[in-house]
Length: 473
Image (cartoon, rainbow, N blue to C red):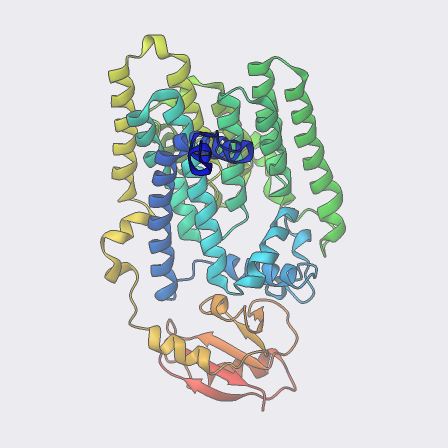
């Protein structure tokens, strides 16, 4: 036999065969994720278009994006999260307990820009879409699973979070999705680990972990769930009674006063305020009522409790980021209901229910943030973009600047920014939005700055019908 013939008939070397076997196993493992990943990618594209339209039109919903940008900048430089927007020398770990946000540091180091945080949030939430879609497809079939995954992607709680811009709950959403999907798969260790991480995202989520542990105990009938509950409760107490008061300038948990239990006891009917009732009904509606038949829905109770106990109406409704953590819960509960009642629900009915959830999601989208995408020119106008860019150009890099929320998120990555509503040291620059004022003085920025900082002189460097910029000479 010739050398060529011998080589052709010899078996493949063991290393090559092992490599092909590993590649084959990897392909088999990834294959079930192809469709869910597609659903998640489409969701990411939708979220990114919305965020880009907001950014391009200088639409800033609150000061949160600026606050977390300053946090990420500090972490990227291996510094504590001192956030001047909250006050001079203010450590944000004394405001809310979110040590896990330290992972933003390396990302921000590579991409030092406020828009980076929007991209990070969109990726995290879109990943949760893929997780929910994968879980639904695995247990309910492709059509129903894709329908539920798409409905979840369009759910009003996620829309409101994307619209509100970056917040720490961006990390809680995928953790909950991973934990609850693992729970439905009876992968108890994975469910435990992903749920346990929630305590490092926000202090109130320790109570959510408490209920996840109780639900796990009910399902797995092991002590592991009770240990998870103890972990969640322990971190909630430690964060709110020890860590946050120790790091807060007021030596207290900043949000404790908002839990008005006495007010509820004196007026129990306040729990049925129309806005609160609508929020609960909206949670039920997006799952066409299916979440009501699963014990997983109990996991929404801690979040709804602190929100509805508060006297602040902003917590009661469907806006802002407060409901985002509820979305993985009610959709996992809907999947659980369809799984456990499989003998009573035919394949056709499962498909109809999945399609109904998607239809509800699409219809409700017109009433929430994504409805603005139907008329981007109206809701994301760029008529003032030139004025905004000119005002920003009047503020050089590396200076201190006091401003309102109008352009703060466009300044934080290159300047030290203070919010105009706090007691701040005299900044080098002041930038204010005067578009909503009547009969405003052409040098209002300088005059008001000198009034806030007696003994300091300011002179105008930019003014038009929308913005004014003044600086110390």
